[in-house]
Length: 394
Ligand code: SF4
Image (cartoon, rainbow, N blue to C red):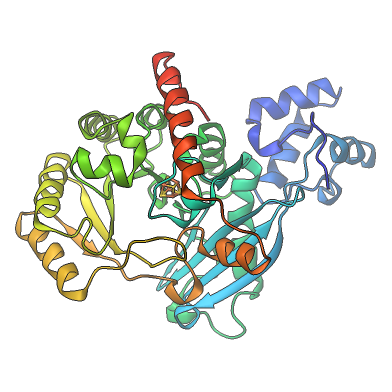
């Protein structure tokens, strides 16, 4: 299905934007509140907004872009604790959303881009390249789909595992793509998810991750909501980080550390450092010591996630011994550190992996890493220009 070029994404509008729309359509201002009331409940099809007049529903149906995705694959792992959803939007683009169930917590891991241009070489999404930005509505919709599946019982035939709640309690922006490279959709969706009249998630139950887009971190701080910032560090020296996280060439560690320190000061919110532990790449003593120093200076909690081996990626998961030694060494240096389970390993839950196996299964070849390297150069150039102009490219 093609989407009209002037179609509106209602989730990209603020409350004021909805009022402007009502005025433009010569409707009373309270229509904006009615539309808002539906949107925060996850209803974006005007035909389902039953308290609007039929004529207005028809007009809005033409103006609003369809963002409701179709569920094309659902894989269950970890004895029902992990649900990986492959969602396809009306233009045919597919993305991944993961629902993780814990006692009293249901966390959705959402995507902000179809693919990713940052080309981290250990990441399946990075290897598949960038296709397009998601709209705010497409980001919000992932939470709506997961929440509806939980509430309706579609996720579990019988009882939910471990006393998990029947609704979404936490959202993490850690799926496909770099959230701060799609800043408008990320900020707009955070506002919707936090809206006390609607989804009502506390800022603290929303986590936005980044590999280190410094201008985006500064914009996120300006949002004025203490959302948790998770910095995907993966390497604590510039020489290794330039290789593992190529955006580090543009925003090296010292600059990133300063931005994170400022974020912490502005929001009064603790940050976390994410560390994908890769066998014999970043699991040595030098990296453990450099990580400990950064984490101590930032008073950050460190989450270590052993790498999920993915098809087409040359690196491997760390041995148990090296994992244990790394975690112990960081902890011994006074840092709070958690070794995360590899949630979803049997549901292909590494970022981009379900889509990778889906496209490979459909006979589509993943682009070669050389394409990713070229895109990183282009993005680094664009990002440098945006930084000079005081804004983030998206
Ligand atoms: S790790 Fe994140 S930023 Fe890097 S390529 Fe993958 S999705 Fe993009």
